[in-house]
Image (tube, rainbow, N blue to C red; front, side, top):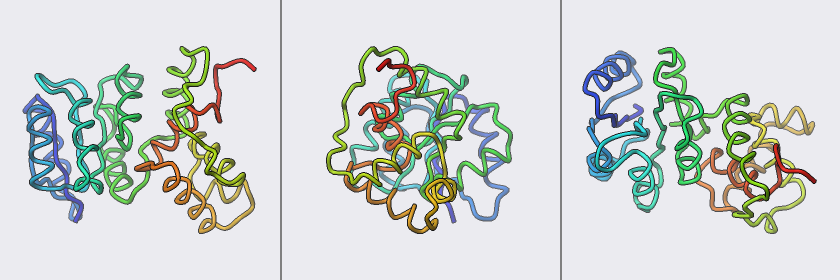
Length: 221
């Protein structure tokens, strides 16, 4: 069973998500939170596989709640998915930098929500190739220089190559096809890059690649 925590300040929104998720045989909603502080409390008590976290909530918002959850070592296995009204919400990029595993727009189709919950629970980042490019390029374009927030010196040349492909939004199978290697080999390279960079998941790998200048959508030179 995939355990899910719902965090949204609107009761009707939570009820809608709960009804959809509870109808699935492999998903269980274990708690609900009306603000970020409650989300952190329930996360510590229930340790869900996935948290659907609204970005805008009173008092403690979703960004701060995500930051607190990611900082807790005992919650290392908890994956936060940011819920937002707009697909280029100004806070989404910061949430990904903080450690969120991806995001969903609130009016997404039910089948996409369910697919997303299952994907994140299995360790995948909830970022489609198109969304990855649009979301991070939007913010990257606002900087004249790469942030250089991640040190890629520890990576091998092949791992750097794989990291760049992850930043394009490619899956392990797509990376394998691009590099003419097996999916298992591609997965191994991705896993090693995550370990060396201290990334929680693929979403953070994408952020690291942009911040280190490995992928530079809007910078000149």
